[in-house]
Length: 137
Image 1 (spheres, helix red, strand yellow):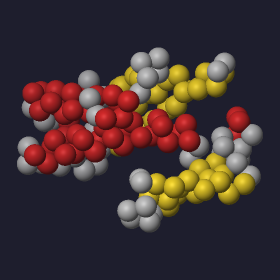
Image 2 (image 1 turned 60 degrees about the vertical axis):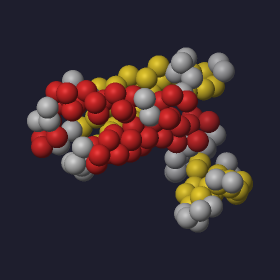
Image 3 (image 1 turned 180 degrees about the vertical axis):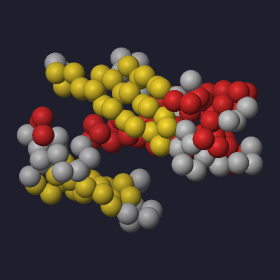
Image 4 (image 1 turned 90 degrees about the vertical axis):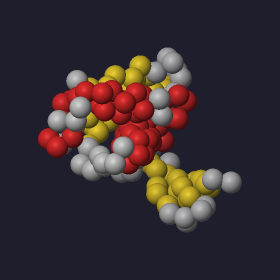
C-alpha cells in the first residue's frame, strides 16, 4: 500500500504516506463548499504534474552532471462546471540565469523528459496542458 486517506469531517482529509509516515491535509476549495485553507484534491492533481516534471528533469540533469536547483513552476488549475472536473493546467517555468544559458540540445532533452513524466502520461487527453518554458522558450 502507498498511502492512507482519513476523512476528518468538515470537508478535510489527512493523507499519510505509509513508507515515510509523512502527512498533509486537504480541504475542499472555496468554490465547492470548503474553506480553501489547504490544497484541494484537484490542486494536488495539477501540482503533481509540475512536481513530477521537475523531478524527472532533475534526475536527467543529475545524470548529465549538473542540477536544476532554483527552477520554480507556477501552477494554474482550471475547472469545468458540468461535470465538475479539472479541464486545464497552465504551468509557467521560471529558470534561473545559470540554467537559462544551457546548450539548446540540453534544454530540449530536459523539456522532453519533463513532458513525458509519469504524471503527464497519466493525465486524460481532455485536460489541456499549457507550458510556458520561460527562458527556455
